[in-house]
Length: 286
Image: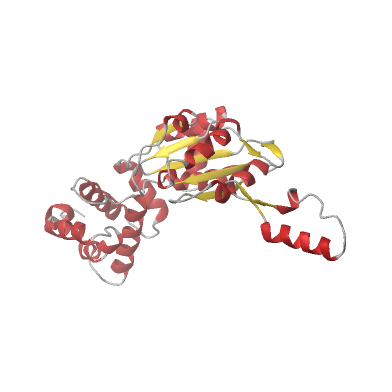
C-alpha cells in the first residue's frame, strides 16, 4: 500500500496522528522504495507511534522488538526450542525409534524479526530504541535490513515473500553505525510547531476549549525553551491538558488547574523547581 504524501497525511490524521510535510514525505518514500525508516528525535515526539499508526492505516500486523542492553540475536531473530527437542529425544529413545531431525520448523521459536519475514501479508515491524541495544547487535540487523532475509544455519536462508514495513527509532543515547544508517531512510522528528500541537490537543483532549488550547500550547512552547533535564514531549502535553481539563471541570480556575497538573508535564524535581521559579512568565496568558 503506497499513498501520495497528501493522501498519507490525511490517512494519518484519520488515526489522530498529525505529521508534518517532512515526516509524510519520509514515510511515503520508505513505503515507495521499500526501505527501512530510521526515526530519531527527543523522547515523546511520536516516533514509536508512527509504526502503530502505519499498522492501522495498512491493516498489517504490528510486530514490536523492544531493544535493551544485552539483547542478542536469539531474542530478536529465532531460537530453537531445546526443551521440546529434548522431549523428542526421550520419547524416541523410550520407543526404540530413530530420533530423527531435531532442527526443523516445529522446533523453531520465531522471534520478532523472523515473524516479520514469515508474515504472509507483510507486517509493520517496529525496532524500538535501537540505541539502547549494544552496538554489536546492529551487526545482526544488517542482513535483515539490507535484503529482508535471515540465515538459519540449520535450515538455510529465509527470505520475506512480502517485505515488512520497518520502522526503527532512536533517542540518540549513542551514535548508530554508518552501516545501519546506509540501509535506512532517515528522518529527525522535531517538536511540533504551535499549530500542529493545538491540532493534536483538540483531537486528543475532549472538552478542551480553543482558548485554553492556545494558552496551554504557548506555555508548553515556553517550557521547552528552558534548560530542562528533560523537555516535555507531545504525550506529556496531552496528559497535562487532560489533567487540567479534569481539574477545571472539578471547579479549579484554568491557570490554577494548569499549575496543579504540572506533575503530568514535568517528571523531575529540579525541572519542577525551575518551572515554578518561572511560573509568572510561563502561565501569564495560559
